[in-house]
Image (cartoon, rainbow, N blue to C red; front, side, top):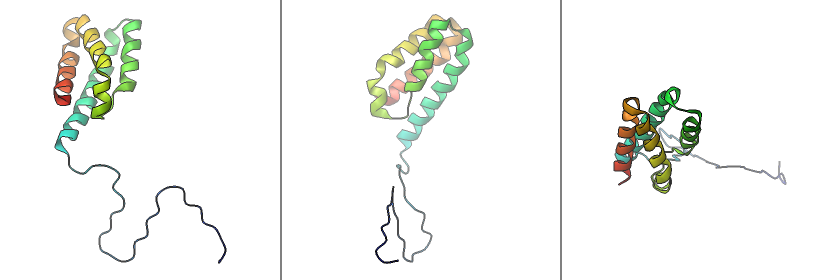
Length: 113
């Protein structure tokens, strides 16, 4: 086996001994604020999908584009304020059925501070 080359694509972990080894943590542990942000994005996504039957084709297209932009990434969402504003405007235009979406956008913006 000497002289063989090993190509590793991605993380390589060697564990020698130890107890209850879990592996690699690629995310943040805890972070109540981020959990709330993630939940707010998931709720807005759910509400937008439920709103689609009440929209014109143009409004539905805007919502579809907005759905692809929604992410529980605080910095990215701050840069996408126009997307959130467009979604809130569309939801307000359809009346009472869109009010939960308007409220969800408001809660999301409040979390973004």
